[in-house]
Length: 170
Image (cartoon, rainbow, N blue to C red):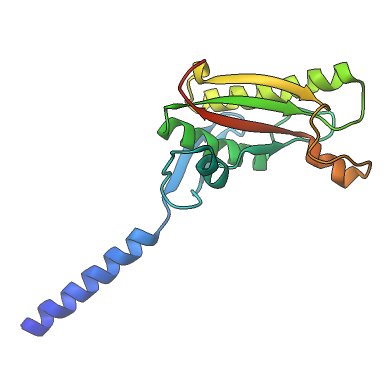
């Protein structure tokens, strides 16, 4: 009988250890895809606490197609993680910086960066992040990630960057 209890205890502890290592599953409504996103959150639970945690866990950059502000599946996956982190860490506010590549006029790229930042803001709000915690800004082509003329390289400049800072609201 004593051996049976020991075996049961070992089995129970092994099962609990396996559960503790399984990352949490995030299931949220995605109004733009008409479905639900289900996936694991990198790094396990969302600890929150710093901008570096946000970048590491949720990712701070969303990329866009050329001359477009549409959110593809990869962008929405990043934004689902960002929304989860922001909802769990309500003491942070955000600025979404819109960027564009070097093609086009300054005015066109500022407007495109603004549309990209607005698309990200609206998606985060649709995921339950309070609009009062989010501001947007556009830099157009003024702050490139890379200065280059190769199309593959220019794609790195078609982005938004979500910058988090302590202090809810604006």
